[in-house]
Image (cartoon, rainbow, N blue to C red; front, side, top):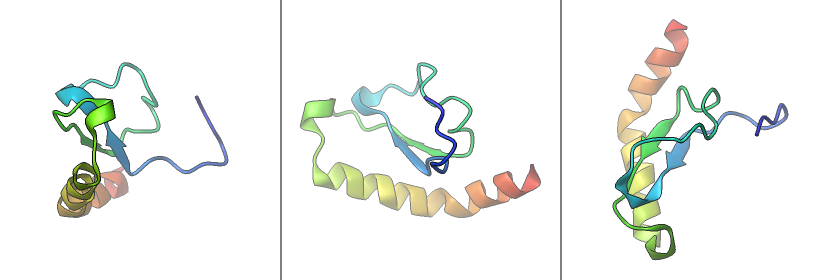
Length: 70
């Protein structure tokens, strides 16, 4: 699913607590923040997304440093 006009994702939310990507956007998500809540997809609520954004903001300086080292 390569899209040249779309930027790489900043956050990937993987439901059910699994930490694997199953080859979904494997190259595009190399510097993305992976958030894995334990809730299944139908049970995701707004507060899960709020926690994903807060978790991303906490790790943002590290991601920026790693992407600039490239």
